Length: 473
Image (cartoon, rainbow, N blue to C red; front, side):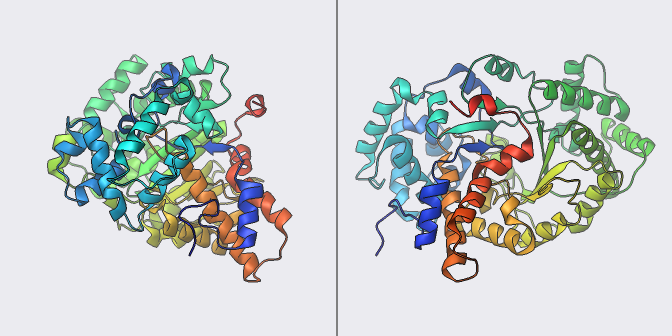
């Protein structure tokens, strides 16, 4: 019987252990997609207790607590921080096979040097130990980032954001970079009830009224250039359903005008508007050497009652089962046919689509860029052991795993970075199994280099962000 989450956790053979401990373990982290607060980093805030940094805003944990029968008041309400922590401790032994069990204990080990198992009996002791450390200067937000050897992290930001926090952070001589990501979803999702409100906000930012599509595109490109000047090299699109149909500028403007008049839009109109706008943005990304991320397959805000009570991103989303291949192919081809398709990372929330996306990659590679079109890491409901293994296997079988840009956290928590370790252990175990099973030569030196590339180096080359000044810190 193996010891619980020891130094060889998830590493099942000698090759895997060597690859992890000698090659992967000490590699820096390039976290190119998360939802962390730039203001919290600028202010270098210090959390008062473990609940604030661990349970505040973490809808993964909220879903588990709800499933265990905990009242909403005790999850997102004004129940005391200690009582919320105690409820989390009580549920822990029941999370058998859930990644939350592993993540929780990895975070306790790596940040707080606590190797006890969290449960009702150990809760008070762990609460006190964590909080004692959180009150020291070594546990401010910036030091939490340094502790995990983060070199680059990219937040997620709306085009209307003035980026004041990023601008101030850039003035400081930090040993890691904090860069904004351009996420224009609210301008793309024309069918949403808050579309009018968003267009008004964007108009105020650019200083002119946006009353036709051409002005909308002009405004977005101006904001895109502003983001570029402030370090952005990555965009992000939550295309829960991939929609595309050929359209002219006049057709798209007519659709935009209908939306401004609150007229209902047909599916074909949505396909034309969204496909046209994403294409224009994609071409602008390609011109500037950006990476475009496309997240596919979320079914959001399923509980209308809880959406009304708590708003979005509170744990009421799930996996969608819409088909995506044909419209995705047309969307990418519409940019590629004029050689204006940017470097692109495709993520799917439905693992059914793993092979769909990995075969899509090969259609649009080229341009002298290794892995120009990427299959993104196991995302959201798939960033668990089985989801990562399935993503890695599909990419290995149908693409080029050695050119993979690796893991990200997609998290709102400053304690989430051990998820990179979780991924690295799974990756090394997979490579070790190839060696163990005689499916790949026992060339540990070469495999170790590939592991290091996937952990960090491939991302450095792919995103083309200058980080040499911070690499020796």
